[in-house]
Length: 294
Image (cartoon, rainbow, N blue to C red; front, side, top):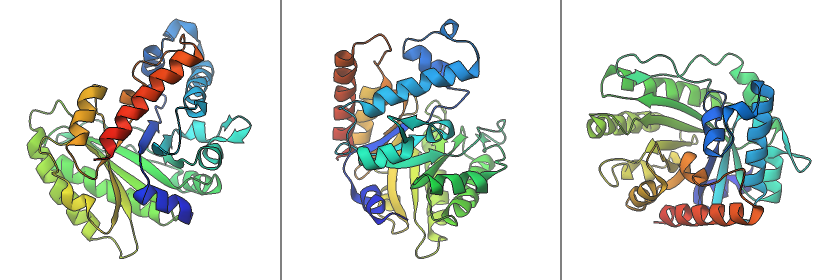
């Protein structure tokens, strides 16, 4: 493990930029970016366009290591290059931003009020490629709609996958997202907190994970996790809240930093001049970094 990356992940200022939309969410991301589905045909063209979007974000002068601690990449982004360098290498060695890789293959159908992750055949091979690319950690997402048995199944699976990631010397970002539209959101969050505490308490002395969680209804609900010796960092997802609301909620949760995706790219379009694009991105990064500093 890269000690400089570890130090930055643990105590670096700023937040994590989630640039990891995959096949399912890419058309929506491109549409918000001002590229409609009739502008491209087939997956290859679609992924070329989304890589151009990500390249434009990552190479922007606004996208800097002082305000951005890390960035989460989609597998295909890791395999591609930015300005002639592999993406993870560019992020770390040019921008001083810690690279993470999204490893999940999407969600299973809802069962018992939650969606576990689909099977991940070939995960070991993917993790080996991540290590070879200089990636620091991974991200794996599940979704919780209601409290109950499904929630416990999500957490159990997250820690199981987490152990596979830890075995490769990588740091897993465990992401059991609670749906912000859940009619029992606060109740689910209480159950989730207890399950996560049990999970991190069971880790080995030198094992550390990160947690990516929905901004809770109760401010500082996850304080014990933020302070836990086996938790490197607690980060928050925007989860469908607007950037302003996400930042307001985030600022009230001390020690938690952002890991925003859609809220980061809100307002960016392919049609903007570089100046407009960079100014818009700069304002977004500034507001998210500020809310992450509390």
